[in-house]
Length: 60
Image (cartoon, rainbow, N blue to C red; front, top):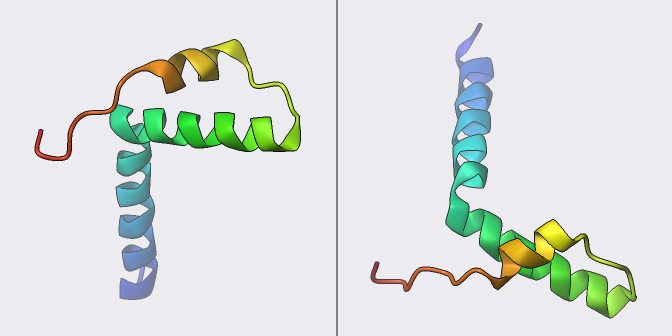
């Protein structure tokens, strides 16, 4: 694996770690609900439940 492939792999791992963060998942669920409502689509209940959970304040 050369240094460019290694850099790409490190970026992929960091991105996966961010997406596993519960706060990121809740924010993404809120965006999904908003998008589905604007498109007139039905949002699965588990996504609605996740979107209803409060986000942490910025200061934590």
